[in-house]
Image 1: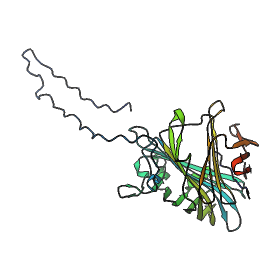
Image 2 (image 1 turned 135 degrees about the vertical axis):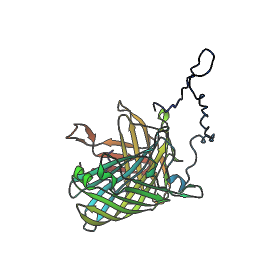
Image 3 (image 1 turned 180 degrees about the vertical axis):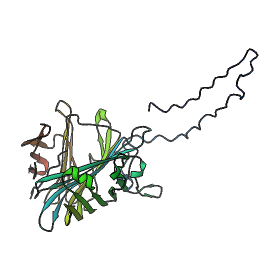
Image 4 (image 1 turned 90 degrees about the vertical axis):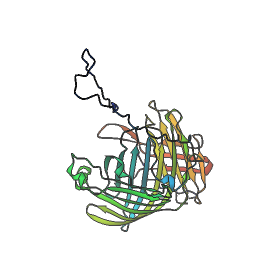
Length: 353
C-alpha cells in the first residue's frame, strides 16, 4: 500500500476426529478372550448452543467497537506525519491485523514503518504471532471498552523474539497510544533502528464510511469501517540511537468483517488532511484485469460532518510512476484528485519515491 504525503491548500484440521475403535474377540461360547470387558466410552459433552449473531449490518457503538471482533479479518491502522523541533519531517505507519479462521488459533500480524524525508530513506519491519495472548483489551460492564494489543512476534526458532519488547497499540474512544520499536535484529534487517512512543487524541468525531460504517463488498463479503481522521500526536521518535521529540497529526482506520481478500489487481487508498481542517479519504479497489470493482470515499468537514462519495463523485488519476529496482513492478506515484462537489483539485506528490 502506498500512503502519499499529502499537502494541499483549499479555500485554501485434517480435523481432530478422535475415535476409539474397540474390538471384542469372542470364542465359540461367546466369552471374551480378553480378561477385561470392553471399556464404556462416554460421549464428549455437547457444547451449549449459542445464539446466532444478528445479520449485518448492525449499528456501530463506540467505544465497544474499538475492541476486537469475532470476524474473519480485522485491522487497527495508523498513518501520520510527524515534525521534529529542528524542522525535520517524518511519515509513519503502525498497524496490527487480526485473522480468525474456524477453530484455528487467532493469528496476528503487524507492520511498523518510518519515512525519513531528510534522510531520503524508508525503514520498516513486520511481526506475526499466533494465540490469544496478544489481546489484552479492556472490558467494562460485560462488553469491550477499547483495544489493547501487544505483539512480540514470538517464535521459538528466534531466541531474540522471546525477550524483545512488544509493539503495542491501545485506545478507547479516541484516546490512543502507540509504543513500538525495532529490536537489534530487526534494525539490522531494516538498515536502521527506530521506534515510536506517541499519545494520540481525536480532534473530530469518528467518521462512519458509507453513511453507517458498513461497506458492502458484493460477492466478497462486507466490512464495518470507521476512521478517526484527525488525531493530534505528541511524543518521541527514536532514530539511530537519538531520542527526538515530535508533534504531528495521525489518521486511524478500524475495519473488520467476514472477508478474506479483495483487490486482486491492487488498490489506491488516500487519507488527506487539508489545511482548512477538512479531511478526505478515497478507496479504489481493482480486479485482476485492472478494472475498478469497488470505489468510494468520504469527505469530512472541519466540524466533523461527513459526506459519502460514490464512484461518480470524484476522480483520481495517476500522474507518474515508480519502478521497483528489486522486482521490476511498476507502481503509480503521484496523483491528481478532483472532488467537484467540494471544489477540490489536489495534486499529490510523494516526498520519497
